Length: 199
Image (cartoon, rainbow, N blue to C red; front, side):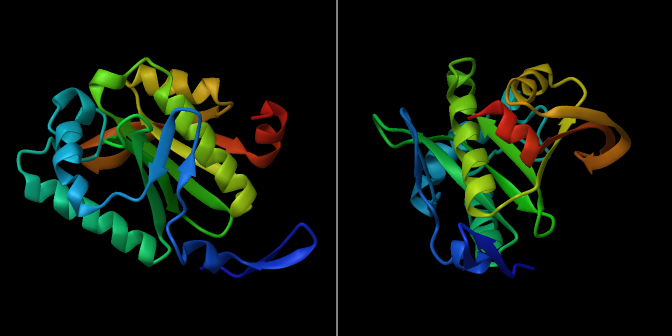
């Protein structure tokens, strides 16, 4: 899936980025690998119907469900299919959500995220997404980052707009989860958009 690329005048093997999970830090947050020991905290996030309302995952009812989720995310990273950072505040290092990418091809990825309800509307997800967007464009030379959003998810739509994502259109009944089809709005952030935003 990945080859070599030129960065800063030197050849870089993209695959080496996935040799070790990259930890990122912002002013207030640590974006790190989620471990099985984090499962009780991850469960607190996904046990809330409001968090999973616009998510393709069912509301968690057992610790085993989130343990399986963590293991799937680890496997996807190991297979270079995606990367999902756990979001933790520096003050306690407890996982309160996650954000990351599904790799579509060498230049195109899809972004996803969720956050515990107690931490909504505090700028946490904005801070986290700016960090991983910077990482994606600088470290992996992404050309295009996509986001798929359910129609009623106005908070997510507003967040993406604030980060420079452009709405491209409606994908009718594009997603299928929780027993039914869902219309999704598609948004994108291109490398040239990102440069103009000046994050």
